[in-house]
Length: 254
Ligand code: PEP
Image 1: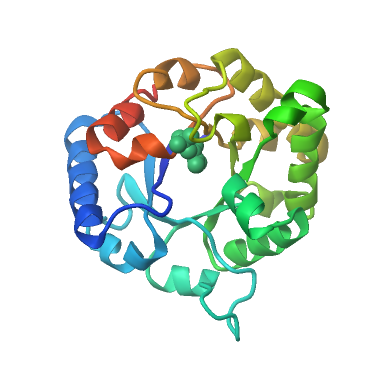
Image 2 (image 1 turned 90 degrees about the horizontal axis):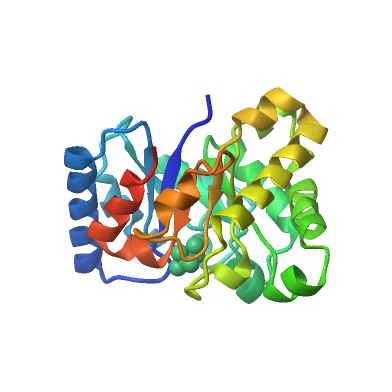
């Protein structure tokens, strides 16, 4: 059975007081209003993860995620945060390979393979992001590009370990732009991703992997996106910063 997930990526937003307010609103709204079988992953800035833990009951419907981790377990890497450190404060998920990290911090597929390893070795579930630029979508082999991202960063994993990964398809041209992939575009790519996984790991694993859509998803378009057969939820940026809207997105998972 595929797990349905809606994850909120807060990026570099909110003061501590604002973060606490958003956490408590979302946790309460989800508790009171969400009845379906969906896991909600909140990914606040790393600075607030310890405080955020206090708002989230272990083993409940809401889980805590980080937005990144370093590939090494410890050492002289000033300013960085490692997977064992995240694990030690009760973080369960970590977003890896977000397009903003690839673009602004030069993260490569090879480096992401190491980050994925470190996350999994430390009991974290990677939410591995992939997706093509607008130029590639219009002029290039965008499906091949996304397949290569998966191959290069994930396909060294054993089948048993790969099965623990969550994938987020996030077309770069749709992130924070207000341009959403149509539900058909999202479905087509999610289908291709699943087929690519089946080629490496077989059908059973491909059918069980959770694949999220990300890119200007909001309370208006979420239901249609989530209704696609290969879309198992969303990775939500801007719309995760407002408790009412984010909860409505969560409720759009059927
Ligand atoms: C994201 O950054 O993961 C994202 C999907 O952002 P937005 O929803 O704002 O497009």
